[in-house]
Amino acid sequence: MSETAQPRVLIVVSGGIAAYKACEVLRGLQKAGCEVHVAMTEDATRFVGTVTFEALSGHAVGTSLYGNPETPIPHIKLSEWADLVLVCPATANLMAKMASGIADDLASATLLAAASPVLVAPAMNVRMWENPATVANVRTLASRGVSFVMPTQGRLACGDVGTGKLADVDDIVSAALGMLGGSAPDVPSMAPETIDQGNANASFIEALRAAAASSGGTIVVEKPVRDLEGWRFLITAGPTHEAIDPVRFIANASTGKMGYTIARRAAERGAQVTIISGPVSLAAPDGVEVVRVTSAAEMYDAATSRFGHDVDCAICTAAVADYTPARPADHKLKKGIERIDVIELVETKDILAALSRMKDSGQVVVGFAAETNDLIDYAQAKLAKKGCDLIVANDVSRADSTFGSDTSRISLVSEGGVDEHETLPLEQVADVILDRVCDIMESRA
Ligand code: CTP
Image (cartoon, rainbow, N blue to C red; front, side, top):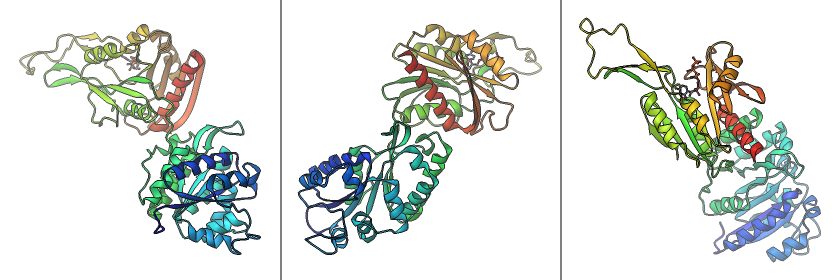
């Protein structure tokens, strides 16, 4: 960094609709005490004129390598001047030039000559962002130590919805300031596959992360999707243990992974989440309240007492025992002395059905159906019997979808029909379910 008190940032603006956001970024950096120069591509000037950036920065703004009255080699002068070069917005084209070392205008030549750290804030159409050419270019740049403020999801200028929106101005400014201060900016990261549901993008982000890790010191700033902010979720998870005596119980093979993963993703997407958990060996996800219970009766009481009108959605993933011993012994039963070969069972109370009866018109209740055969028929019957809004059916006879698996193959069964999904990692399954809950909420609104 320069020895002067004022950190020097060169903003390279390339030609995209998000170019106007560079004005706000410039202002944000100035407010934080930075001196800012701007270089633009010719195309960028079609979106915002040089005069605007000249007025804001107080410095001449160049687009060409030639005809500069102050210096015959403006790209060298600018690149030596800057403590940080921020490319904002970065088009797919400019990143392609950066990756292949093309230097045919002031912007790209300055980037090739840059001696200081480079931070890139891409913005483009989702298909351009996910194109293998862009993927490769971003990966190349990251592996060379270039830092990124990742684009976010949303409605893009072209009308498409997906990843490609320029990151928030505040995030770009804080990333730049973090780099000037020598520290990584404190922006929360998110699971790669939640940036976009598409596998292509997930592997892209994975590759980018790997490249970033191997290059050392490169930061990738990702804006988490927090579309569930302000929502409350109640999630039942895990098995229940039904006592026969103080040391014996009836249980099942549930591990709680599905419920805990949904809870974690809901919390990462901004929701307030409570898990009513049967006995499992899983840690509470960050920021999630876990109420631990043992039996079906305890789970019923914990869930129904917490299902107030402030809860937006209940998701019953728990494998609740359908039957419980009618008279659990208060002491350890002794074989040969007491009869333990016949245990009288009584039916437990159905939590999912109870919550479905309690729900008001704004609340969504989701149930699960783990089946080994006739999956959709059973799920449809369950939907009607329990009175819930959605049944997540999964075929537990499949190795890639059974209890304890890290993947699941689900079908979403509602009054509207059946929506079958491929086998997916649990995180993506969680997002598919949460996305459907959002759709139901939105359709009601
Ligand atoms: N469920 C519940 N409370 C119970 C039993 C089940 O909340 N006492 C919920 C589960 O969390 C799950 C769904 O109901 O969301 C499962 O439905 P259920 O008909 O109980 O499935 P199974 O236990 O597999 O029973 P069946 O033999 O009828 O298929």
